[in-house]
Length: 205
Image 1 (cartoon, helix red, strand yellow):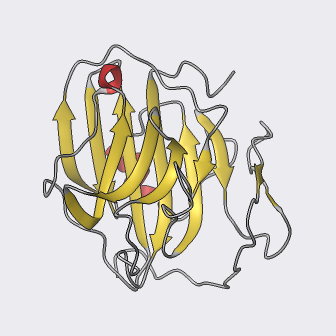
Image 2 (cartoon, one colour; image 1 turned 90 degrees about the vertical axis):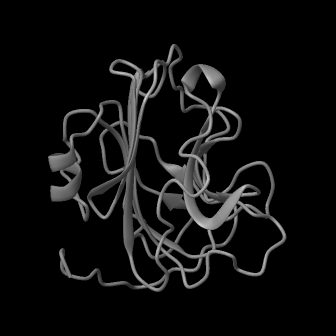
C-alpha cells in the first residue's frame, strides 16, 4: 500500500559508468520503474545516451525533460541523481549531485503505483540494462526538498519519514537485495550480478 496511488514521488540513485553508450544498438538504459507507467531511464532515440529521462504516461506529465534540456551524466565517477515528481504542486525537478538541473511546472492528474512489473536495471527488453554500477537506490512517497537531497546523497536513515524502499546493494553475494526499511520491499536478482567493492568520494570533491 505504501507504493500505491502516490501523488508525490522522489527517486534517488547513485550511478557510475565508464560508457553510457556501451556499444549497444538500443539507445536506452533503464534505472528503475515500470515501462509505460513511471520509469527513470537514461538516453532515448531523440537524445544523447547519457541524458536522464523520466518516462511517464500523459496524465503524469509525459516524458521529461526534453532532449538536450538537461546535462548528461559524467563517466568514470559516481553521480547522484534525484527525480521529484509532484502532482500536488504540479512540479517535476531533476537534481544531479544535489544541484537542480531541470524543472517543470505542469498540472498532473494521475498518481504513481510501483507494484507488479517494477524493475531495477531493466525494462521492456534485455538490451535496456544499466551499462555500469549502482550503489544506492531510494523510493520516497514525498517530494524531497533541495536541502534534503543535497545533504543526504550517500545515505539516509531507514526510518526516514516518507522513505518506502531503500536498497544499498552491499550484500556482496546472493540473489536478494535487502530493503533497508521495515516494509519488506526486497529485490530478487534475475541475472547474475557482478559485485564490486567501492569507495565514494568526499562530498563536494
